[in-house]
Image 1 (cartoon, one colour):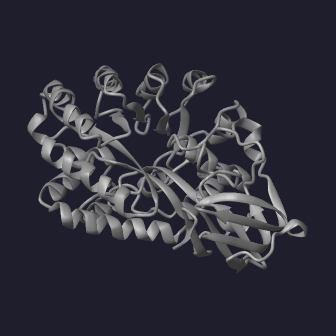
Image 2 (cartoon, helix red, strand yellow):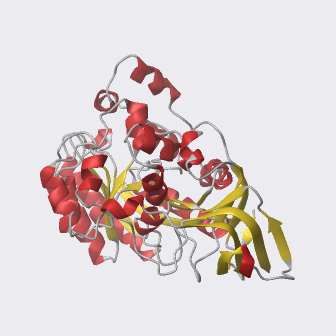
Amino acid sequence: MSILIKNIKSLIQVEENPVNYKAGKEMQNLATIENAYLLIENSIIKDFGKMTNCPKNIEKEIDASHKLVFPSYCDSHTHLVYAGSREIEYKDKIMGLSYEEIAKRGGGILNSAKLLQETSEDSLYEQSMARINEIISLGTGAVEIKSGYGLTVEAELKMLRVIKRIKETSPITVKATFLGAHAVPLDYRGKQEEFVELVINEMLPVVASEGLADYIDVFCDKGFFTVEDTERILMAGIKYGLRPKIHANELAFSGGIQTGVKYNALSVDHLEFTGDEEIKALLNSETMPTLLPGAAFFLGMIDPPVRKMINSGLPVCLASDFNPGSSPSGNMKLIMSFGCVKLRMLPEEAINAVTINGAYAMGIQDTHGSIAKGKIANLFITKEIPGYEFMPYAYGSNLVETVILNGEII
């Protein structure tokens, strides 16, 4: 089917010569075409340009007068396959308990693991698909989903099989990440090395044999997994062809960023604690610094030094961290607003961070993240708005009117 979107007020994030990502000062550059058209054929972006060159007599036409067209958001870090919610811990946070204190009491990740272990695969899939449909309606067209709320062989595999079902049944692009080392279960307190062995020798071989994951992740941080633990797990994953993605430096200067760079991680995520040594390690690497401002906001944590990172020449990605404990939202437009208000990013930088840089952090920059000929037609049409700056500015409004994924109107 061919779809022509015409009279577009502004076509956002266009690329004639696609790049892998935007870094440093380039993050301020956002190519647009005013009074534009966009042609989709067989799920692919076929052509785009000024209305003066607009084709005629197309099978399906959409008039986007006074509206903007964006490439769909690429959310490169989520935990949206989970059972139930954790609003009781929300009260604990309000009363002043820290993330680490809640975890030590058996809350946090361990609470989610208990709920997930008791939930059937079908119920978990249904709960997760409700969240998938929500983020699609808000403009997300590609999402990375991690395991990590299982913490047993059976429950981790259950999560990853649910993620596989989502891949097979939803129009959204999905990447799966095996995060067996998300937390140390209560049964392994004081025996952390044994749990690391379980992840490497029992979980990982089955995950790999069933083709359930694209990437491998470890929570390398204070109170969770050490650099030594992380290196062992990453090396084992690499042997199975799983490229690393790391939770790093959310709670302290953990060495997680340097470890990620050492093992050529696709991304290192969180990064609230990032200093000169961490920035130096990331420069000239192939690792995308990924920030999760929703989690920092929800937990009341310090913000990462984004301006220093960008001014040093680094690229930056923004992702939602959609999860029940520290960021219960997959609204990437809101994440852009956090990027602007909390992290002092320019609207152009925030848009690049949730589109092309997010695509890179998922390994799909060749097919997603921008408006370019030959890329998959994942995009959305806004309501009538003044300009692209209005997207992060109007932080409480859903401005998405029409969603197109794989060239199909959703």
